Length: 83
Image (tube, rainbow, N blue to C red):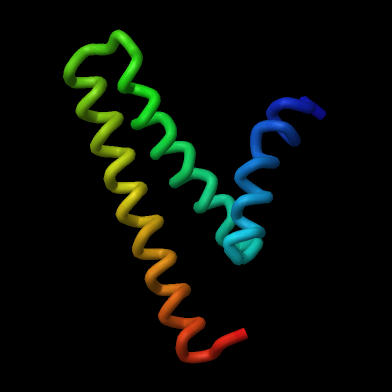
């Protein structure tokens, strides 16, 4: 077992996902979207080519929109069936 890769790296996303009510089945996708967004934001202070920056921002934007859509759907479900 690699402590960093298997536990420390995914743990914050798992905790946040649990706090937001993201189901266990969706947590891996939630982490992928979160990682993409973080990488896109991290490009702000890195010395990369314009093409790399645009690709990072594009991926971050697509992941942000997917994550927002996911939560819109979950909120709609909760409005129909509150828990």
